[in-house]
Length: 109
Length: 114
Image (cartoon, rainbow over all chains, first blue to last red; front, side, top):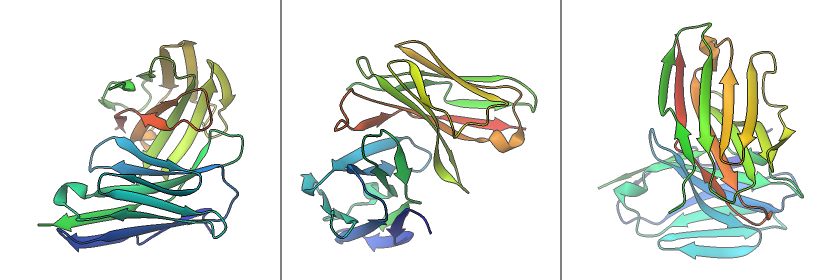
């Protein structure tokens, strides 16, 4: 079993829909990261969380440390949100990241 | 915006050749990472440095891969000799000195070994 599990693996949506991507992990962490990768593109860091909730534009990330679970929400989705979203966790006193396998999102007009 | 710069963006080489990938981390970032991404394995950490000193290279095949930071503005990843199974996208990332700083990734080097 992977230490970081994401669901769903693939997600399609119509433009305007509210989207949720989930991440569960089994190890103790100091922080959780959400990353975005467009097809053929580089990796962009969206959020780094250690508790609670963060918001940036239409993106919202939440984390529940007790339940070892995080969600990434996209409100009013747009075709440009189509990308792979990767959850990664960072252990205590380490820079190393453990990555999930990613969620491939496609948003259609 | 500050960027992590990787060169080359694409590299096609023949099996057995030496490949060198370069990374310029963000000025002032003291931790530099090399990751490899493949369809089968996803993202894997190969090696990382703090203040130019190697901290962990356990993810790297030692017989053919080497990673160095000759100075604070340059990290290199070398494969010699290259093999077709090394075909992947190699990402460099850097972060600042505190553990609550985020990561910044480069655009990657897409390596194809034929």
